[in-house]
Length: 229
Image (tube, one colour):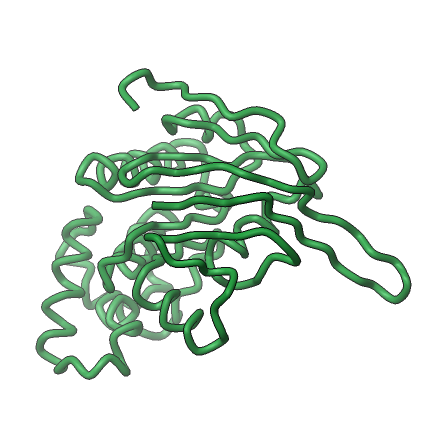
């Protein structure tokens, strides 16, 4: 599903060039539950942006479902993000004065699907993410942190993406709610979704099946922590 070959990413700030990624290579198969972990400045956020088709490598190749993403233009990258990748962000990125249902429907707004179909799909994704139906018409700013994360996960699922890319998905949650959010992601993985989590928290990474540790722009270790993967 995902193959990265010798990814290099350089940033130029004035006359100073910084190498954020120094030749990273790995594969992630369909249905895996993977965390990419590393401290601030390790390169994990740069890697996430490349995996999410939000940025391109300076050199190297990134394949998603057999497509060389590193060679795509802006319009093609936009289509790929919309159709292949579901994003879950630390800050949730929900519209505070929109209902739960509307927040989940938003990615379908310009998809050509009818209002009825958009609403049906949003309801299905919310149920799938474990959201209580009684909350569907609540404004997102009336929800708890855990409930907002479920809405964010449902929105990530609305286009039936190949992968769900979660950036620090528990960063704004307390310990108990963090474990509930991770359990939701685990349940989605058990239903066949490929989940990639970017985190700096070892206790969160330990809840996944494979931990790719990044430091100073290179892969420090790549360990499977669950033998059934």
